[in-house]
Length: 114
Ligand SMILES: [Zn+2]
Image 1 (tube, rainbow, N blue to C red):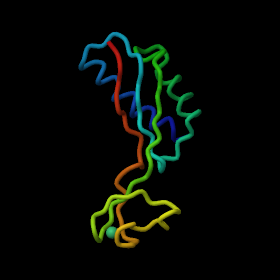
Image 2: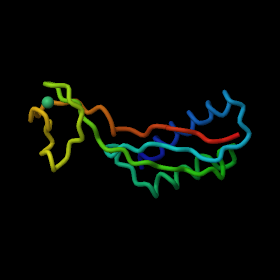
Image 3: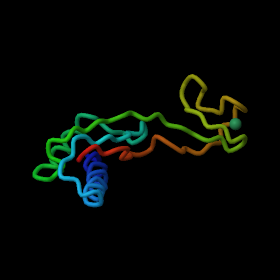
Image 4: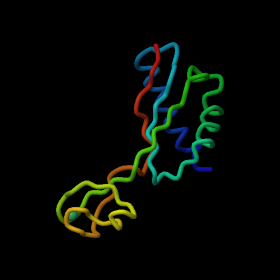
């Protein structure tokens, strides 16, 4: 269950933000979940509940926003979403050479609290 390692990373980051901003209460945690991270939302939620039990984050809402995989073409620099529709190649120059630049990880987007 690799969700737990993602949760730990996000939660540790959240604790740092809480400390830096001297927050007493956290209402919501917004995270971006990359399509390539292979996350099962239900498991993510479950791990989150376990990880934050008894902390300032307990009871906060975990909002997950799916993020599509994005790639940058090696040949012309176009940024695109590789999918079946474009045959996983650059829509501009049809190149197959690209670097995945987004949608691989779980990113803490925003923490709402006071
Ligand atoms: Zn291209």
